[in-house]
Length: 284
Image 1 (spheres, rainbow, N blue to C red):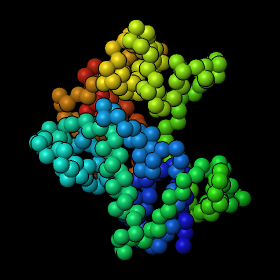
Image 2 (spheres, rainbow, N blue to C red):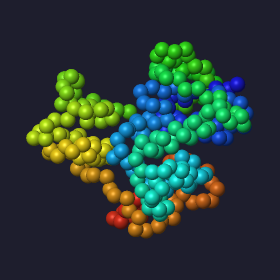
Image 3 (cartoon, helix red, strand yellow):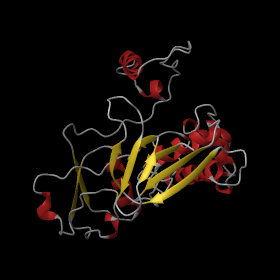
Image 4 (cartoon, helix red, strand yellow):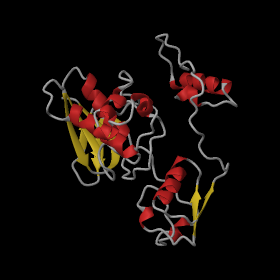
């Protein structure tokens, strides 16, 4: 039985395994190597904070491109959304922890042992992959390899997928000197909010992207009303979603297979046409 090893058990690794289970036509084994964050959640959906929201509306968050309303229909099965009408729910930015529930639910459904029709046997290994040793000697031989683990036995695999996700920010020059200083946090996804300064002090955030928005919203939700300064090279916050116009899909539905470079070119071309209005309709 061929084996596929997936290094990383966040959204990408989990959905890769789920889609293997959905479309496999012959028996195969899938081994997911996961560490650090709960399987199926990763960094993005491992947050427990209710104010950390998806940055895409529910209508566009299906895990399956061939079932575009899948996430919306899943939300409809949860009682906490009973009082929200369909239109409002489609346009809602759902808490990321709930999307993590959704991904884990898909994993349980497709990767569990309950469905006798499934061709995939899935195993989740809680360990760290430290190396991959290719089997093939010739370049491009594609003979698989061996995944070396920090603690466990090596995993022999015909296919190996890297799904290691978003890495912590690189350390700033001189940051090592601050490693034991409780006032400094080099990883915004740790529990920094459990050790907040008094409100007469000053919090500085390096960066003004979506993670900075998460930090600011968390501070306000915890009732911290001190001074916050966010610094970045451009000083720009993420743009709001714009739904003022409908825009045709940037990629023509003509059945052609396009390279990643060609797809990027098409999307950039449409974004340029909407310069000064909003590029959001192109990617929404």
